Image (cartoon, rainbow, N blue to C red; front, side, top):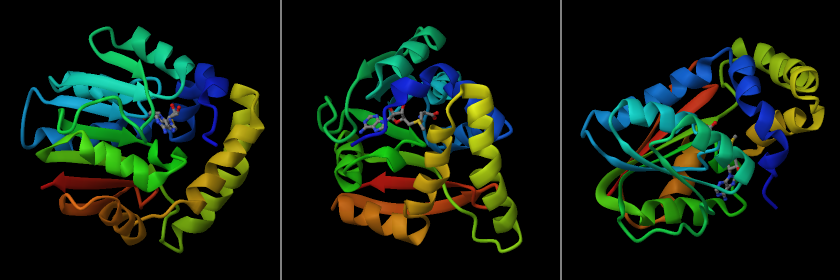
Length: 221
Ligand SMILES: C[S@@+](CC[C@H](N)C(=O)[O-])C[C@H]1O[C@@H](n2cnc3c(N)ncnc32)[C@H](O)[C@@H]1O
């Protein structure tokens, strides 16, 4: 069953910016740059859009934005933040859009929460135009043996403590590092992407901030 983000929507942005030391904004900006290198005025679908922070960045680059998410509470915050984007309730695993409807698809910190990961990836690629680009951001454990102990201390102890202090919810922020650890990263996630669809021309990974965040770029053929 999918994690219920309605429960943490109110404090989501504050916690996000605090626990990533505002790096989350930079990671989303970096992802949007990956799209805007090859086009402008893109019609873009942001999957698992949450409170709409990716939409903020996409709109700054002149994209037309549709956002979908399972959580009505997250969507209502996204709508307040981005009047010119279109946000709707929807499941990434059965998107309510036609084949090839979008020039670009983005998904920031969403795929880790899908119940059927390959199905979600397949549907995101289905609604992308041939030649279009999909950019996925996801958190990961770093590989560097010097960074790893600090990362473990921070994610397993400090983040759950911050979650209790700021959002009154230790449980949600204990689930976070656990779900990051369980999720495939790097070559393993690229393999999952390749398995999910036969319409992939190219896929690549870029490590951001010592690999704590990974950016996956996929081009549809
Ligand atoms: C960690 S938040 C990320 C939100 C936002 N993209 C961001 O950059 O902050 C994960 C979001 O994924 C949504 N989500 C999880 N599974 C989903 C699915 N199958 N379809 C659509 N949204 C989903 C949740 O409701 C939640 O808003």
